[in-house]
Amino acid sequence: MENQEVFDKVVGILKPFAKNEEALGGISLETSLMKDLEVNSARLVDIVLEIEDTFDIEVSDDDADQVNTVGDAVKLIVAATT
Amino acid sequence: MEIPLEDLASLSNIERRALLFARWLNASPIQRVSHWLNTTIHRRWVQLFTGRRVHLVGMDKMAAMRPDRGVLLASNHRSFFDQIVIATYLYKHVDTWPRFYFPVRSEFFYDSPLGFFLNVALTSCTMFPPIFRPRDKRGVTRAGLNFLAQELQSPATLCGIHPEGTRGKGPDPYELLPAEPGFGRVVLQALPIVVPVFIGGLSNDIAREVRQNFGARDPVIILFGDPVDLSDFDDEDPRLLRNQVKVGRRVLQDVAQLAEQEKQVRQELQSESAAPPD
Image (cartoon, rainbow over all chains, first blue to last red):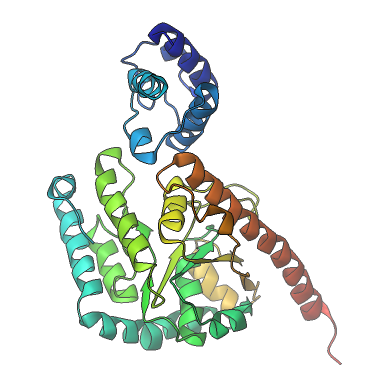
């Protein structure tokens, strides 16, 4: 799967969880989930579960802990699907 | 509890000192003295201020338990005092376990002198290990969860955890929050006996609680359920987030059933107290 395709799907997953819609408009690989998008830390688990369902992958808690930015999520998915 | 040095370095000075002291106290022979203090002295203070209101359901099952591995009490969390009240009545009625752990969020009890003093003075550091929320301190939290999983292999250990990880603050006292993955990880790693617990009737206002005990006596009801059947999870990978979430949901289902039972018990107690004397 192409990185851009993964990125687009990740943005789609993040949309309902992002409190800062302005940051969502200018989203990039460097965008922080918690600081920029203001995702509630308790909802990070739900995001990872959605990622698992969408990309049919399994994520460990150690890997989930490493996800701070959109780019981290994309990297995780690309590594798990290739 | 093994803590890598780089993780220890992520803590503030007071957090590091408090954690190392609590670790030492729980591992040293002094722990026996601490246990004696908790079970004979400290519990009496809490009993004095709650004893006239507390109604226990299922404590007989806890007292009869002869476990072949550690026991994990999974209770709802609504009041600051939930765990200390549950512990008090366990100490009073049950002498099966020589080691108790009640993991607690690090805020206050591990990052302020007053909080840590209270942890030592009132619980002899059984509020251990601390759970650190900031992401850069997660290594220490992970070390703490691994420690609990290891301790729970032993039938000498009882550990009380709130699967929700934080207090429910919504208007409905029976509503439960989702379980934290860390709870599921401990369960999957240790495969302990998991006993669901529901406690209802406590607020966060200590003055109100004392007044209630000597006045209107709105009951505090603690229900201990039957161990949760988690045999489906015996071979599941503890590291996978999805498995951790599934275990948490499964355990909270049983806690939610106890919440329904609590409503009935509360209604019965209120009807009894409203009935005219014979």
